[in-house]
Image 1 (cartoon, rainbow, N blue to C red):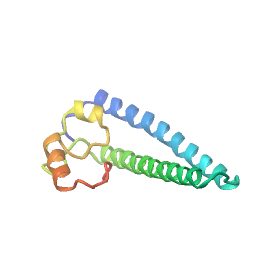
Image 2: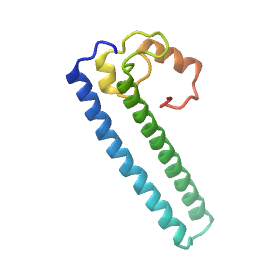
Image 3: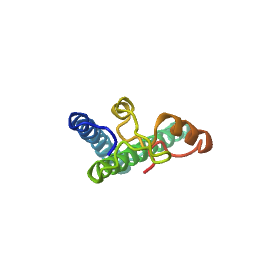
Image 4: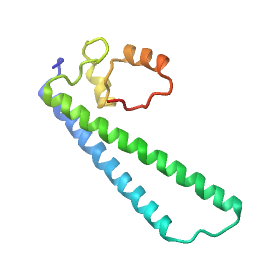
Length: 128
């Protein structure tokens, strides 16, 4: 594992736990709201209906993004367990702790992430 101390890994674990708790709540809320919307009759003119469809689509996209991040959190925990957490998947160098603290699911160091984003502009934010 790259040069991460036990206290740094503990910090990362706490960050992952807190973010997972937050995201799980958001996904539960989104599911509940979708269930409630499916039960109630939709009334209004075509503009209102179009707005509802747009809002439903945005809520669905946000839920998918949250689910992708939950998967990335699980993957980060797996990398911690196997000893590869904090190692850039492209160049193999250590990802600085400051980056990991800011983005605990980071897979790449900043230079490799910048290259990746230039060549994969439409890639999901959280790739596993």
